[in-house]
Image 1 (cartoon, rainbow, N blue to C red):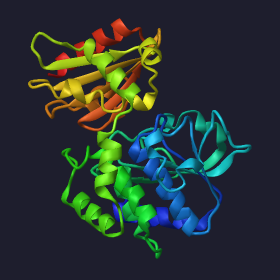
Image 2: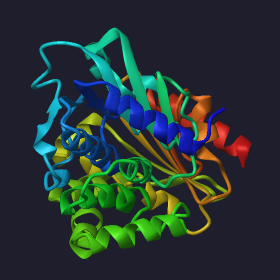
Image 3: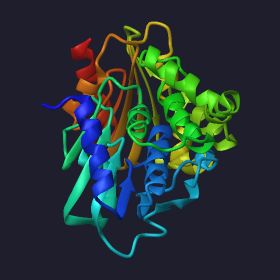
Image 4: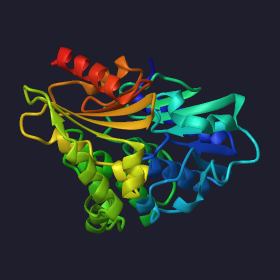
Length: 325
C-alpha cells in the first residue's frame, strides 16, 4: 500500500498527464463537497486544462459567493451533452454517492477518488484518501501545494470553507493542529473568517427556522435518555417552504441534549424510503453503525438510506443503536 505522499504525487501526475475532466462530488453537496469541487476546478484552470463541474442537484444557496460556484452545473437543469473519459470525484465515500452524474462517465473512464471518509471503499483508478483529514479540502490543500502555482484569496476562501464547515467552525474533534495551521495560512491570504462564519454557521433562512421548529416539535428520546431523534416528512418540507439545504445542522440538536450519546434525523424520501443522519457524542462509532444499513461516513457523523417506511426505519435503527450502546 502506497503512502499518502506517494498518492499525492500519483494524483499530481494524473492531472498533468490528461485533460478534459469531469469534476463531481456527492449528492446534496455540503460545504466541503462544494469547496472541494471548486478547488479542483481552480487547480485545473491554473494548469490550462479543460474541465466541467457537475452535481446531481443544485448547490446550497449560501455557497454562491465561492469562486465560479455558478459554474457547477445541475444535471437536472443543465446536463452535459456528452460523456467524459477522465473523472475526478471529491468527498464521495463510495461510488454510488456521485448519484446520477455517473451517466456522464465513459464506461472505461479513468477515475480519481479524492476523499477523507474512513468508510471509502477505494473505487477509482487513482485513490487519494486520508481518513484522518478533517475535510477533503484539507487533502486538496496538500495536493495544490504539489504544484508551482500562485495562491489567491479565491482558492484560499474555497479551502477555508471546506475546513470551516466540516469542523463545525473548528469545534469538532477533527480540528487538528494541522487544520489550524492551514487556516492561519489561508487567513493570511485574504480569507474573511468572521464573515464566512456568520454566513455559513450563524445565518438562517426563514424556511430553515420553520423546518427546525417543526422537527423539534416531534423530538423523542429513549427511556434511558441516551438516544434522541427527530423526523421530517415531505409534507413538512412543503409546509415550511424548505429545501434540502435547510436541513443542515438539524441533527445536531437531538445530539446536543445532555446525556444523549446518539442523535438521529430521519428524513422521509417517500413512503418506502428514509434517510437517517447520525451524530455521536463520542461513545458510538456511527460510521460503523451506518455501514450496517449500507451507508457510511465518520466516527461521529454518518448517514444511510433505508428502504423502509418511517416507523419501521426508526424501530430498526433504534434497535441497532441500543445494541451498540
